[in-house]
Image 1 (cartoon, rainbow, N blue to C red):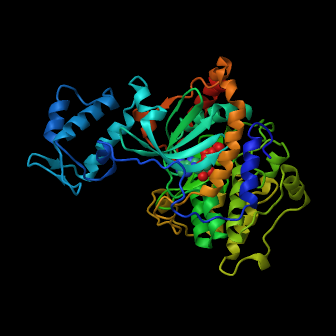
Image 2: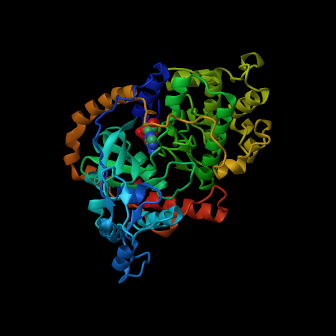
Image 3: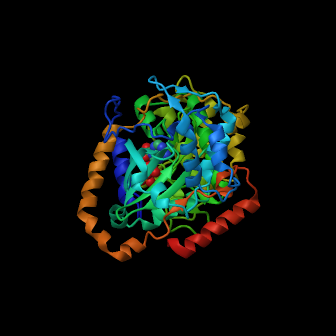
Length: 491
Ligand SMILES: Nc1ncnc2c1ncn2[C@@H]1O[C@H](COP(=O)(O)OP(=O)(O)O)[C@@H](O)[C@H]1O
Ligand SMILES: [Mg+2]
């Protein structure tokens, strides 16, 4: 399916998701559940209005000026010490001695931010970033190279998603470039419509990518359960993905693998784009970059032609079609079969096919995104064309951008938004491959290929969200920086 390096994993993913009927998962089915237990600092990081002995904290901090050079570990030591005087009753409620004051939530948030962003690679990173630094709670997804876990950082109590990728699998599938590329791009991006990276590290066997945890699960799981979405939910999803794409494109990156598996919901129901494994900096000559997922892959990529951001809009059209009709426009078991279908005819939603509760505008919008010729496709001349389509007339873009628009589809409030049955099937397939290739990890040349994977959150720049309206100057600098880094160490 995927033409080059990622072919096996995408093929497997496509095969399983395309032909399996949806499974509703009982809440008890968890893999490797770990009793996570509150650690001593968790309250300070996870609850509004947590209380600490402020006078104690001030005394501890006095000799040091709180500047960017204060490291995370130091702050944690202060917090832990300052917290020593807090008394906990048998009901686990905090009882504060008179001297103690309660942090208003805003102050608390600011303080949390300092802790979060002041981690520097120089400080005890083995303690803060290693497999042992996290409690692994349960598996929330399977990727081409291993498991994605819900984890809790033991020291800070913060919850993350952690993509654990087997080096043996990566090398066997000839995908070193893909994983290094994903880590490189993510270090340059930060936006509330994508899944942001917090840190990245490695050990002898695996790479680890620590990201925002998306409690709502992926849209493949939800479309599998729902069969179809209604027009209102679909419009909200498509608009949210568009905002994410505008940000990604403004940084001169084409995502190239937009599909329901790579669209995850946060607990409120907002969509975030993930999986930058085959994303690329846009360039005029890119006809050799033919990776993607058939079914969502634009015809120009299928046919090995040069392509632009419009490939992501074709995928957007496929997703909208699938949400409306419960099937994809071009079906097939292989890249070849799907390619033949695309070449044979231009799919168009006919009036008679439009479900009763859907508008004509919706069908027209989808038909325009699905245009085989990129020049005819909505969005070819920029995303404003998409925003200007009548389907989006009166759409409250600003409200969505600042997340004051209530999502119409709200995922389960518990952690049951992950398809455990599918996870088991795919994990078994991965494990077999890992076992038969594990010995290659003894080769230092193999290990050297992953040099530079580590990433630790820096103060300042990375903590500031770059909006999708970022200036051309910024975009140019960013893509230059990425290309430079690409040349230096990735390829
Ligand atoms: N941050 C996250 N929060 C929740 N689930 C996630 C997150 N990242 C990935 N997943 C789940 O794990 C699956 C595999 O992750 P992904 O990054 O897409 O791996 P791959 O690149 O191998 O496809 C996704 O399809 C999704 O279901
Ligand atoms: Mg994926």
